[in-house]
Length: 190
Image (cartoon, rainbow, N blue to C red):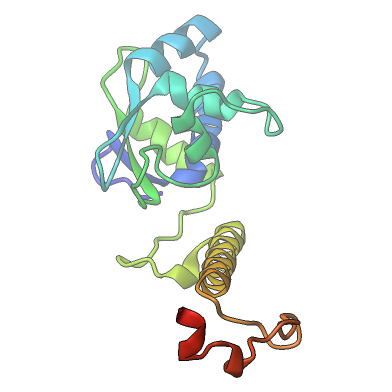
């Protein structure tokens, strides 16, 4: 994480829960009680996507951090955050700016310095994220969708081919009955 001013911290989306936990640990070590921690996270901690500006409250970050990793999250924003993506549908950002508003019980400069000393620094992504840098699960999802799309197109082309009278070699048999050309003479029209 990087700290431009002491009241703002840039955090990777997949690191929000860990940042919350580290922040809670440092504040607890500083002597804040549970009620004071709730007050700090409710009133003074929020985050915003660096790309789309989607806001996230301190309580939502807490829900994400405290949720069982195996449990299904009801909030779609939190589901996307758990996967490491922005909570906004369609946004591909990997970073959030955590905003730390003034609070009478907290010196944010000291707290952030302690949090940074306890956690590993965040690696920064290049400004343009390519398809190759997607997580493996995302790559598989994209490949499966492409494969399903190709199969659907091939099946539709095959159906069209059959409906317009086309034949499939080795599958479609020659017709059993053939028209005798002599039976279709001008005399039969009488």
